[in-house]
Length: 168
Image (cartoon, rainbow, N blue to C red; front, side, top):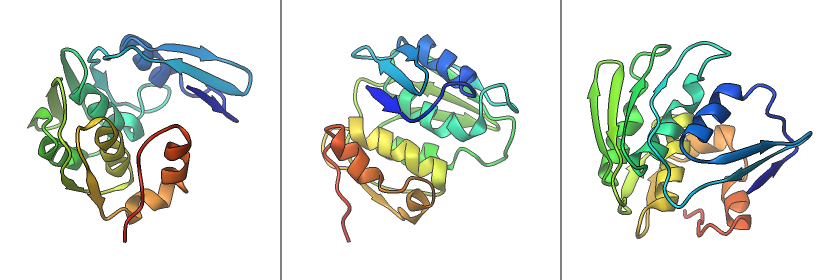
């Protein structure tokens, strides 16, 4: 996959973690290329202010870890109650245990489609990721959260080959 019109200049912590999962990431002048293995390796994260790992990517990495090989520990140090998406990922079959500001995510072989509810912008992105890899259909409710930060996401994902559609 090649993401154009962007720079990796401010994404060092995220790119480092993607590489820890087994992805090959190549930064170009105005693009980022990523090649992922068939199954990623679980990666632990600890959120912290820039330039450390951003809290805004925590939910997405929880979704990745839900189907990765191994177990990851996610420590959220910026915001309280930032694990609301974990309950929704569990509905899809994720193996996640929350203890205060720490989530223990044991990767499962597969997720199963289900109806889930977006609770905020980042949570909605994590549910899209999980829904894309889940077997069967996933319906994400309250997508107005998604629309605040990801304009035209369904068209962009469809252009990449995803089977995704907006329903009324």
